[in-house]
Length: 264
Figure 1 (spheres, rainbow, N blue to C red):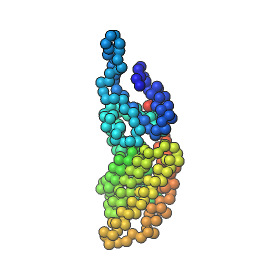
Figure 2: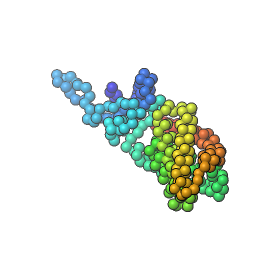
Figure 3: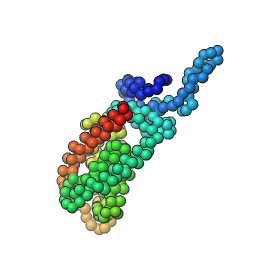
């Protein structure tokens, strides 16, 4: 398929969405390359000769296969949840947004810092890590989630490094990783967003409980099931409800803003 003209984006949008409906694929990606036409024998023109790798169309859920063929070139991605354009600046964007989420993980707990009980209920550090997973994907979510509590403990002394910050590092890393990985593999609908969020919450709390149990065993203390139930669920109910309400709203707002920016 060859597209000519100064601004083929509208045609690509139409063809991409049409192909999604015809093939039932979750995602399709197209690389952009420059073509030129050369004169053929007997005055006939052969097909356009590509001076870059071939046009690459793939189911984007295949992951690294796309990256290997697309290389560093820009690509056009059509998904059932929207249309995005990615370029070489994607890595820079990821770093900037990851730094923003990390900064939020430092700042938000300060709002409830003077009242630890409120902080335990609202879980303010969980919000930016879950958002990082939704927006940037599993690897970024895992990295930011693991670093945030440890670095905050070193810089500000809160949360205490052992056992709180260490167990939180594994918990938040699980939040960011699971939310990012699962959200990339489901339809971007509200029910699937809630399912992703709940999956991340359950997985993160289970990992937190396991790490706390191991750390307690290393120090010769105990971590009974009642302590796990209280810390993972009962105390955190207000924070869980706030996350279920606010995070889907924020993710939808970010997705809408991102789509509108590319349309303009």
